[in-house]
Structures are given as C-alpha cells and as structure tokens.
Length: 135
Image (cartoon, rainbow, N blue to C red; front, side, top):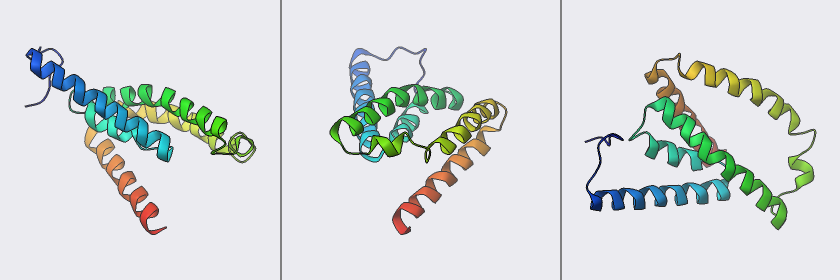
C-alpha cells in the first residue's frame, strides 16, 4: 500500500515513518558528503513513495542544495579539496552549461512522460555505475 499524505497513520506508524525518514535523510547526507553526489538519489527513492515524481525530484533538490553547500564548505575548511581548483576557470564552463541545462530540465520535467524520465534516470544510474566500477 502506498503512503498517502492525506491519510493519517496510527501513532506507532507515524513514529516509525518519522524514524525511517530521518534515517534516510541521514544516509543521504553521508553519501552526499562522502561522494559529493548520490545523496539525492536516496532521498528521491524515498520521496517517490509518497509524492508525484515531479514533486519528489523538486523536493530532493531542496534537500540536497544545503547539503551540497555544507559539504563544499567542509571540504574547503578541512583541506579535503583545493578551493582554488573548485572555484577556478576549469569549473566555470561546467557551471555556465549547467545553469541553462538545469532550467531546461526543470521546464521539460512536467512536459515529458513520467516513464521517459524514469528510464532516463535509470540509464544515467547504470551508466554512472558502470563508469565508476570499470573506468
């Protein structure tokens, strides 16, 4: 049975749901801080159980943005990453491409069939996993 936000679960179920949700957020934070990416995937999979796909994608972004900013700050503060490289002419082209790309993706999300978006997401995960495992 899918979770419905309008249905109020019994108190023990609410406590369990809150605990699972907090653990999922905690796990997403660990993955995001450790790998620099991927935490949103955990959140998305959890959010997808109780929200429309479009709402789940947007909500995962809202959660990941502050986590990513915090991770960048901690990377710089701890000397884990070189701030000179992170904020240099090497990263600027990615940012300049990512901004209009993100805008186009947000525009297309509500205009594409959900099944196409899900297949694209799955293909990206498989491709990324293959590249990470086998170079």
